[in-house]
Amino acid sequence: MLAYQWLEQASARWTRLDMLLALLDETIRVLETLAQPEPQVLGCVPSPEQERRWQRAELLLAVLISGVNPTLGEVAVACLRTYEYVYHIVRHRKTNQLPSAVNVLATIRSGFEAIRSEANELERQGVIPSLAASSSWGVVA
Image (cartoon, rainbow, N blue to C red; front, side, top):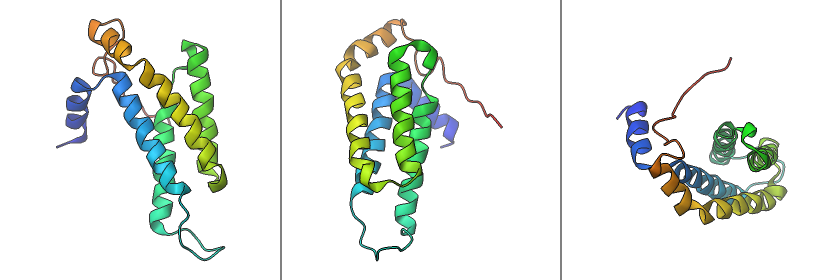
């Protein structure tokens, strides 16, 4: 299956909030994995698998950041700042700060989970544009 076909199928079934919660879940999972100490000699370069996890965390956070429209208000700006804070931790490989990064993302996730049924219903009613109706892609050089 081609990537765009997967997107069409996924976006037809998933709501915006379902997609956001899935992204947050996966980001939290990857960060929790990174927070686990890896058996290695001090001062050594991380294993290729560990480096892949760091890169995956960066990518997931970039997706979260790119999905925020800061013109929508204070909540959007607060989410954007939080995602950027966590991205800074990941980008600079600050392992000791990963637990706090997980905590703030888990807080955001629980807030969105609390409004899940209402947001999904608003999307079904057309008050909130569906994921399929507003999917767009762009590249900035």
